[in-house]
Image (tube, rainbow, N blue to C red):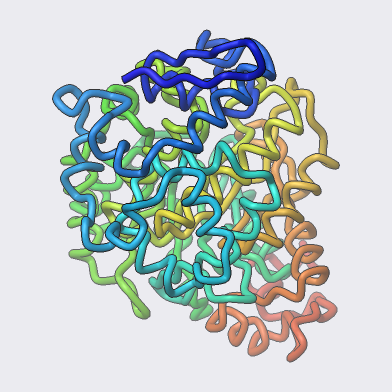
Length: 464
């Protein structure tokens, strides 16, 4: 079905819904690279106006990738909740935006509607929203998950402690982990990106993390971010796996490039559940996404990168994850060129994920060849904190020495908590107080060489 919109004397025609969504997207380098972006600001505005008049029901009858050739499309349509959709079924995309911003769309109402919202609906409405709109609505969306603590409560911010090391040196990882713990990071997960795919080495890492968590009774969870099939093998060999990780995308073909499909993810989900390691809940999956992943694999089918990203959230939603992380600036300037594009993409991802009922966090990051700097990341970090972000990254010095990109530090989490009055996950907060890392107000306490974590995790000569 074609769509059209007049701007003055010029009539703009968009060949189908896929084309309309692409042309309505705020400018970004990835869509320009793919040859699907609007050619002018006027054409982009015409697409936005046309998109605002599209009924939400259209997204249930016109697909951006054919049902017959893509299992993600089939997942979206086959598991759509018609009952949850009913209260908004009469709306256009523009009406949907107005409703989301209204006081009638409370946290409870949004949660009830979420199963009836498809990724394409979420992506469409985000394209006609300003940054402040994305922040306001996302802040109203509350998603709470549990494994060994409770993540996503109002007024709380969690942090993934990311103690990566370029050679997986256990001493280097332990030092970074200790550093993060003493700054109060780690309530989302202690997660390592390993340099190796050796099952033996991966098992050593996950066992080391588990020993620290169990020894100090830390109410958090660990994850070694290896391929999902490696995690399945570790589980089969009896390794203490808490969360199963996988990068996911929004098309079947892109996921095939990652070496996965829905059946493999279902197998991993069942394997992780079988261990029954959670004490507060059974949310056992950790997914990472990022705009541009489908395009970089030549698997976007002409769909704009932000809509592809939203479709990845349908995959995540299927498996009830503890955490979903958009690694927003990691893929590089070919897809998000500068700080402005990274900031906009981060707000879009957070909005769409939360609207679809996911515990969305963000790796507020950039690569050194992007036209961005740490000031841009400070801006995005502050905006996401205001929007109610579930979790962020905690990397020593904000510089990941294994993955070679710039992220957020333990100090950045302190900044966000102090400025916005945010607290840790409640169970983790109680542990931090017990360990005399923070006081009752949440302020960091001075750490001395006699602190029990320092005294036991590092050799005496290193702390004397």
